[in-house]
Length: 317
Image 1 (cartoon, rainbow, N blue to C red):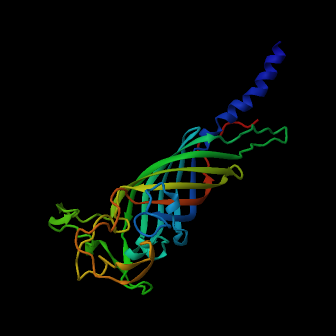
Image 2: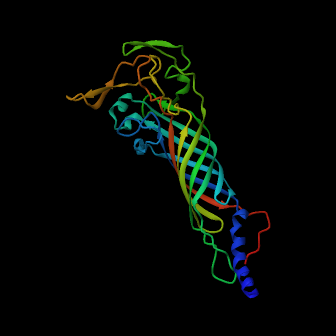
Image 3: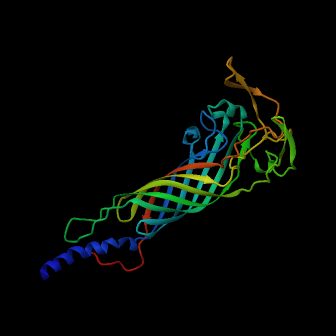
């Protein structure tokens, strides 16, 4: 009986020790690169703009680069926190939309995005770990794990546009108050009734965001791993593309309204766009859709390197 107990202990102890290995491998550094797709008021697909979960509204022609660097810390065996810095260049252009009314709006923008934040990852498919034995050919087999992502932070943005597409002369839009930001309230007649419109204050270049997504990671060896993450960034601003609500008439500001004529067929359906029309008056709806804030999707391939623990490692069997 005693021999059986000793034999069981000999078999169990390596697994107990190896089960605590994650505590000695908490820290990792990582870097990633990938793409982003903007989902806001400008650009988009062939239908009316969708909110931030409307993947059908993604404009694949305006796929732009994204980069990330950060740290990874395992708080618990299946729970990780990742502080990070991300850079992206996002862009949207009505001229590339297949939806005629958006083509006629004729606005476009581009902006650098800098994010400072963190995300939590919870494993729902766990890494498979086997004990390491010096007297056998078995080695730690760390394969694939998958996780859900929830995070957030702050971001910097500064939308710009060209007065003439392709000129290369990009102008910052925020100081131009394209929707009358900071102006006094005014009254318009809408559907036979008088409506008072109060423009927003000038928006800031810094706002917050929350992220939600999925990821997976493949362990190459004890130190190196690669992964893939897809996250939707939902921002707290609807001005990432400088487009939010109603037009504001300003004949000295060519970026406020670039409206083109809509050409209709015999069934009164829009079929194409024509030349420029007279600038729309203040309060004319809608330059943007104020119901939803702007969002963008990151798809990033990451590389991880586990840092060596300074604590003396536990014995290997």
